[in-house]
Image (cartoon, rainbow, N blue to C red; front, side, top):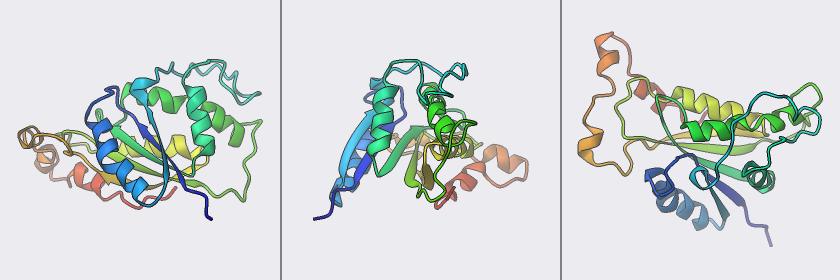
Amino acid sequence: MHERKRVLVIVGSARAHGVSARYAREAVVPEAKSVGSDVRMWNVADHPVEGCIACERCRGPFRCFRRDAMDGLFEELASCDAVEVIAPVFFSGPTAQFKAVLDRFQPLWERRIGPAGSADPAEVKRPVRLHVIGSGGDPHGFDPLATIVRSAFGSAGFRLVDVIDAVGWGQSPARVSDMDPCAEDAALGAPCARDRSSRMKGIVS
């Protein structure tokens, strides 16, 4: 009998019951469970995390001196087979709360990449999919969000394999159409940044 695949769903919104959490419950979790995966949820809104202060105290023990919700997340990351990240896009990047979580991946970076660390060259990186949530209207797309997620999870032994453009999901049609996200780029004679971001599916790091 095959062991069930363990999928960790991370919701990067500061709102516990917002669109991102609903997208996780209605779209991501059912999909994972439909193929028999064991699904765990970790919502940033339910787990207050202090930001990294670059003190480098994690360099030796590969562990942050802070004792907070990150301890539980590190355990979840260590035991999962794949990660689904649902992240709202704020000015092309992550929310402040989710960025604090990603910055706290520093001990994982130290363990694998830092001066005292050592990564297994034969290591097979586990997959991460990023689902981007937003109401639309930002002409600059969300490439920075994908880059930040790729960098942080890459340091932890994962690879970003897909970026799903879910901008507009769960939003009222009127709100989504309030602003043309390509208007500024069109005025400059440039391709729409939103279009460029939506073509990022299949990224491998």
